Image (cartoon, rainbow, N blue to C red; front, top):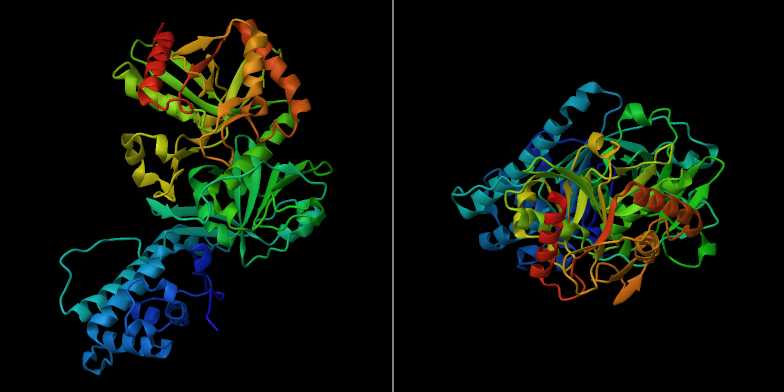
Length: 565
C-alpha cells in the first residue's frame, strides 16, 4: 500500500496539501548525523520513494527500498563511497529530487513555549539551527557524490518556510465552546519571505450564508491538528481556528491581520470565532461557508468546510471580514468594501480618499494609477485599508470617521505594475504566482494607524463598466445612493461571476446578508456626507471595459487635478 502522508507527534506531512509541520517540542535534532538517522527522515524518504509522481528525474536509485536508501546515505556520510551499490549519478539525481520534493512543501515548524521565556526568546535561533542542519546534510551528500565542493552556494530556506511559537491561553470559554479550550494559540510568528505558496484553488465562489445551527456543534478538531490565530480585525477580536492542512492560509494571516497578544486574549471573549476546515450542519444541504450569530454569548461564528476549493486564501480572508462586517452592523457601523488612502501633496495639501466597489472594480488599480501619473506632485500615500473598512457616525450625527481592518493587503498581481510588485517582493507571501488571479499578501500599515479615526474627504465609486474618462461628482444624494447601493460592475474572473453583475452596496460580505439592517445606516451616512459637503462621486477605471491602462491613467490625472485644488 502506497503511503500518502506522515502523521507522527514530531512530523506531519500531507503532500496533497503541500504542507509539512515539524514540532520541535516533540523532537529536536542537534546535528546532521542525528537528522539523517532520525525516524522522521526515514519516513519522509519512504513517502518520496513510494510515490513515483514525486520523481522528477526517475532513475534506478529512485526505485530502491527505504532500507537501501538509508544505508546508502549512511555510506556516503561516513565516506564509504566504495561500498555504494548504485551509479553515483543516479544517487545524486535522486538526492536532488528528494531535496526538491521536501522543499516544494510549505514547511512550518512549531514550538510550544509552556510559559518559558527562554524558549520564547530563542525560538528563531532554534529554527535557524534546523535550517542550517538541513543545508549541511544536503551539501555534505551532494559534494561527496559530485566529487568536489560547490562554486556557488545558495542560502535558501532549506528547513522551513516559517516557525510559530504557540501557547495555551485561558479565556472565558462558554460551555458550548469547551471543545476549543485546549487548542493552542499562535503567540509569535516568523516567516522567511518571499514565500511562494501553491494551493489547489485560485478563485473564490459564491457568498456566505446564515445557518440555523451553531457550527461549534459539528466541530471535531483537536489540539494536535488545529491552531488558533488571534487577530484584531479593526477593533473586532477574532479567534481564527484552522486545520493544519490550511497552514498556507494560517501563515498568510500574519501579513494581513494584526496578531493579538496574550494580554489581550487572556480573560477576554472574542467578537468572532471562525472554524476553518470544519464540517457544517447537515441541515444546510450544501458544502458552502456559513455563519451563525450566538445571541446568548454575542459571538459571530463562521464555518468553512474542508475541501480543495477552500484552499484559496480568499475564503479565509473574506469569511473573517464577513464576520467582522456583521459585527459592525450590529453596533450600527457601516462596512465599506473598498480602499482608503491618506495622500500628502507637494503643495502641502492632504486628502483622505475612499475608493469603493466590489472585486475587480479597480479600487487598488486607481491608487496605483495615481502614483504613476503624479510624478513629484504626491509626497506620500498611506494605506488605511486595502479591501474593507468601516464608517462610523459621531454621537452627534454631524460627522463621519473611517477605520481600517487589515494591516496588510491581498493584492492581485495581474493588474499591478512590476515596480510595485517587486518592490515588496522581499516581504510578500505569494499565492500561485504563475497562474491567472495570482495574489500577494504584503504588509501595508501598522495596527495603531488603521484604527485611528480618519476623516473622509472624498468617497469615489470605482466604475469599471462605463466608457467615460475622469471623475464625476454627484450633486444629488439619492442619485449617488442609487449607484453605490446597486453595486454594479463587470466581473473580471476573480470570483465565479461573469459579465455584468449587481451586488447590494457592492459588498457581499455582510451587507448583502443583512440588507434591512444595513440600509438605515447607509441612509444616515449619505445624509451626513451631503450635509457636510463631502465629495461623493465615481471614477471611471475601465478595467471591465476596454482595459486600457491609458484610460485609467487619464482618469487618475483628472482626479489628481481635483484633489490638488
